[in-house]
Length: 122
Image (cartoon, rainbow, N blue to C red; front, side):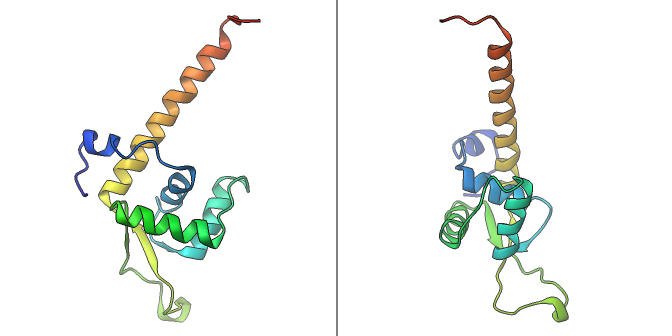
């Protein structure tokens, strides 16, 4: 699946928490598994922690959906480890991440509006 039209992207929503954080961790560029794990923890201020099972299952799942791909971009040879696999967002992955951020924003806006009004039940 590589069609980034809104209807096709919306079919992928809502993303699981781990898929959302993984895509968010890759939004600035390609990275390898352990660095993705560290970025998820940093972005979530330690709230979301991905163990190896969750991380690599999520990578496999979002690859199968066409949201990420293995990247050919690698760091300079003196900083590279040949056994590492690097992953990058695909256009579909970027469009899906953007759609999920908009969806979550609407949910937060709705919740704020609901909480700002008078209580409806006791």
